[in-house]
Image 1: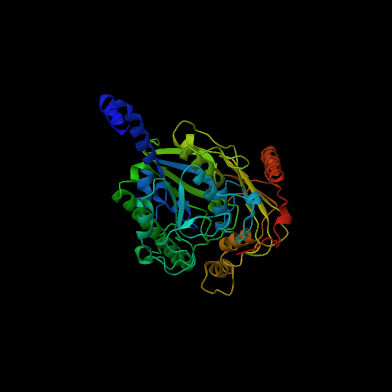
Image 2: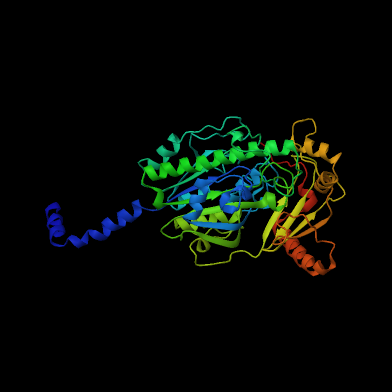
Length: 461
């Protein structure tokens, strides 16, 4: 029998070619690498218009692929954002609708879905999701796990081993940096001149803010270096062009009007993707997407089945240049407990307008990490001191603490949300329409507003 097969293959060599081609195709299935920052203000990346530093490695990915200008975190805190990315669910559905609140145990994440498509799934660096039964990553050593560590040193040995392992399955690897998460102790702030840095226009300009901003920029430099190191491994292993590389900014930094809010500085997030076989170089897309859309996008890329019952939808065809639009609206949610006193906020935006509803406007906003007055060297304390002598600083501080029930901003004319249009009667219909859409979304999500911003029976971690 073996002899007959041998002669048949000699006489008809083409019989074996489809099998060989099929095996080769299986071996060459594309890999996925997702690099995610920690509390990054996307506006500081030079490819997004930042002027304080040139982020060479991140910019190179953007030049070789697609850069999205309208990607949003539905909740500007790490735990909810990452849970949304991994599950395809909005915070009210996955359960991590407060920071450090565990997700519901009965849901599934990318660690269940992608293996069904034949992928092994690993993660290195910051984790910030729980319980482990839902987020069953293979944890890869090499990058710092503790986001408040003063040491962000790393090695790529672990990810190199993971990428080159003798395993027929393609891989999906999440590289989760802790940069530029506060306390901003890593990198070299001496690279930046405090007197010359461009502060965001929603900041109180004083020496303390400028000094701290230089430390923050130093960690963005460190983040860019990490991106370069991951790319270097992909190049040296010959995997770079057969790997979808995604860079994400997560949510905004630990400055007022950013993280822990529904303002643009907190929710707007970088999204860059490189995959030369399908994604054209140097493309910019203004399609609206959210973190909930990332899981179904990766599943479609991997050739997996469409996931039923999740909130996100794939925007792979946007990345491939076959579609120009994805969502009509991006939605936002903030529950302040346990990071401060309850202060529930909801938001909705299209490409031009952002509507924010502060559900307890009679209360003062307070967040315990950023606004701790016992920290005499903090940015917030410096703002309070400036407010004692400067009317502009006083106005900015008051505006952050005491907020109206409704805020409306024209993000094209006012990207830093400095001019609230809610009391202008010409926008009454616009507000009514967006509010209706937002309330419809909240109802669909089972979002009870004020009643969600309270201590939960579900565990915190």
